[in-house]
Length: 586
Image (cartoon, rainbow, N blue to C red):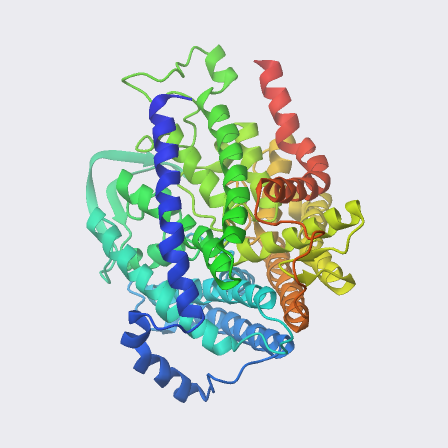
């Protein structure tokens, strides 16, 4: 690994780890209602929201009522996003007079943004008005992220409380997550991005005269020569900030964070990557703080970090060594003063291999889906890493909230397996892990591979599914597998070679996104309610420590075992066989 690359990776991880304790402590104080100055500052607004909505903040809920409220909240959100897309032609803030979206595309997008997936089958600058981008998409970037945070907090409360029939108030948790965590951080990041040149305006698109004429040709038409280029405008920075902080990933522009209007400089690139990991990493400290033992949070963070760094090393190494087919043609792929070296296909010359590989690892380790390069142009094993991180269940830091609660479910499964192996009653943080918790944990873990593999199998079996793949053979299969893995794990990135804005993919991926988001959430909330009602068991000689290196290894092994057993056969048909074909021909 080149020295500058190592410096980038180490420096980046140190910055992420430096944010964990202060941000994690702040979120713990906010969500437990402890006195911190932002709560006092915005307390009148919070009380006004409760009065307007008829909420009694002191009234807590059982897990079933909490679940019903969360599902209703998100269902209404999906309906509002759908209606805004279907009516945007007649609504204000549409300077380009963009038409309404088709029903299947609007349905897919509504589900996508409500589930924190942000899969985009459309080109943002040519499909969405400013109003739709702000009121429909950006608002859901906040609310879907808040939904993930509150589920994680409820599971933490289930582990922290004992003999309790309640797990909190869903409306209070959603309000505080949005008002005190996501909103102020998004404002600060938006201002930082504007300072770097990210666009923030309501001006109409601008037409400029290019220095040289451009000739292009659409299939079946005559060549066209022009010297006029249309530059998209819009309130980009405000959406870009919460897109990253909320691990949403949906870009204002089609090229996402590869577009200089969304990501103009090396500093903006660094800030966006930090924003993606900040809250998922910090929530581990929030977890330790709320259960009364910060060592528990550090252990979970250690497991996430080890997995992330190992997979990042594999990804970067494969991209740095380049493409043997290009080497055979005499293309220079060695780093030098005049070129970055490695596999530069699909990557920005502004960032090179290292920053592109790091961004790809960050965005697929979380459920973000933002991209600054084309994942479909990565080497086969580079693409394998992006796929595999999603298929592990988005637990390598994971999405905002969803990464932590998914990892804690793996921890529950891990201690259950360990307890059976040594003949002792499984317990985690003083709570017995019994049949109900294991049934719900199994549902939370297994529903994702079931819908991903089933959806992929259906897509490769029907003409409508195969027609979307832009490449033949193993790479075409990888494109389809990636699409369903991205949807089922609520990531939202794509291999970029698949044409997914068709009725088949819009409906199929929307169903996978909805099930992949809310089926596990219901199971996790059921586990939280069950654990909260249990009595706390005193620590004994037979209690397995869950804060040391042994537990970290157990947790990593559990995550890898489930991911490997379920997805390796499918991966062998895609990126693995493509790698063997590429290097065999080289």
